[in-house]
Length: 255
Image (cartoon, rainbow, N blue to C red; front, top):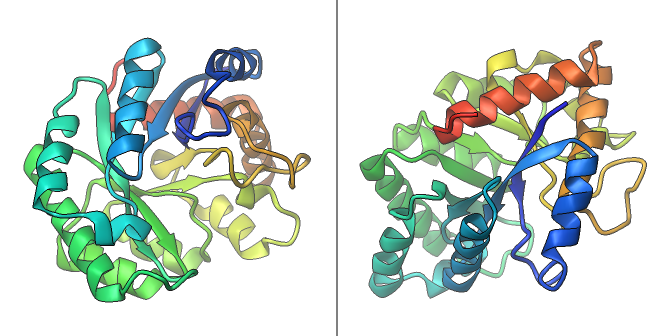
């Protein structure tokens, strides 16, 4: 079994002093490749550094919506340089976050759209953060003509699933899909097209069952794979292979 954790944060403080141990543990659980995701200039740089340090790691770099007020022309110029790095496979995570409601929506809209434009210019997929912002996220993606990207940690119902799939987006499931009471997500998992599904951890957040409440780590993608397999009435091996190949395709990688 080979599993691709399509969205994780080994550049987070939770892992910084022990990255090798987490990579080794992931390998024991079948997780052989990972996309390390940034959120601002410093986190982006660390993602790139890790990707160069380990052959099986890749970087996704961009400005998180909570960082929108820190985004400016200078930061954009640096981001463009980072995106040109050979180990960078996408732009993200970008999008909208209404949960904390601390960053003005107009700033989030502006930074989201600016980064989408860059991704389109550079022919890179985007990794989309959507928290309590389904309608506006969808509207911006549609307005900008986005058809190359991932809705990361998808937690919507099958109606929203179909809307994003119709745009051409991939949908990535995190540990939230394994939670016992997330019935709408279970239904979406069952209905997701086989060629549009990814799995992820979003570590150190969102640890899946049976480790919910613990610090998450890339190796725990295995438990999300097992949950997805149950909801689709198939085997973990088939889900692992399917999502692994999908990740290679969206990120433009060869095995």
